[in-house]
Image (spheres, rainbow, N blue to C red):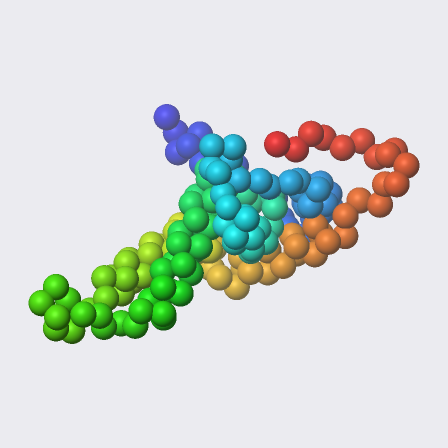
Length: 164
C-alpha cells in the first residue's frame, strides 16, 4: 500500500461554513450515558459537567462510555473524601495504636484514576488532534461559538441530517 492511501482524511477547517453548519447541528445532539450504565442522580450531574467540557461533535460512543465511568469515579471520590474528613487521616489500629486511615489510599487511587481518565478523554491535545494546545483550543472555541448560534428554524423548513 502506498503511504497516501493510509493517511487519514484531512480535518475540515473549524472556521469554514460547512463546519459552522455541522457544529450548529451537533449543538442539538443529546449526549446521554450508555444504557448499561445505571448512574445515580449525583453521577448524572458529574456526567453532564464532563460532557460540557468538549464540543458535542467530538464525543464518540467510546468517549461517552469513558465519561460515564469517570462520573462514577468522581462521585466515589467525593463520598470517600467526605468520609475521610469525618474520620480523619489517622485512626486507631487493631492494637489500639494510631495508623493511617485506609481511605487515604483509596482516595489517592481514585484521584489518580480520575486524572488519567480525563487525559484519555482528549482533554490532552496532541495525541487526539495532532496539534498544539493553542490551535486546538482556538478550534474548540470556534466550535462552541457555532454550537451556541444554533439553527434559527422555528418553522422546520431547514433540512437537517440525522445525527447519531
